Image (cartoon, rainbow, N blue to C red):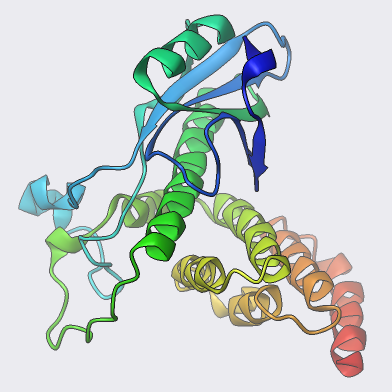
Length: 267
């Protein structure tokens, strides 16, 4: 069936049905097992048409455990993987038929580990990527004026699904997300997509606010979103440096710092 589908590749998501520039807001995701390409894992990504906050429905005793100073607006578009983990059980042919019948996007996520934790993280991360594509598309079609920031503190019920994911995400996974966003930022710069670049920068800043200063997150975001010469390489070096810190490979850091300094002097 794939021979009549228009393929479209955007960032880490390969659209076999649909278009990354105008996503439908609902998509079937699938990935192949790293150890057996015949094994297909899948989930369904949905962008809620009505803004909502999952935290609004949490018992107060649970919601109170989350910090409120970084909480985001409840109206943000956020992707929801259903089920929350890429599961096996459906063949590629069945997924193609479902996508045709339901008029869903069909997206190939590539190969993935059999580990449940990684399949859950991949479902969440790629659903957020898809949500960003959808938000960028909607913003281009229906620009909205900026509203003034709220005068009072944000409420606990404004915690979005994206915030919940970041609060529980280990540092290594946060850097994996930053690595993907660096690629998105460079893609936006190359395509002169100001809306996508602005939203990508916001998401990167949302992550680095949850990281210690030793990782130099501000410098990483600045480099990733800059169009200056060598800025892309600088971002990669900052990310590599962060991984070395996480892995406690301190002996490698001075060489990376020297490489960073050399590039910065050339700007």
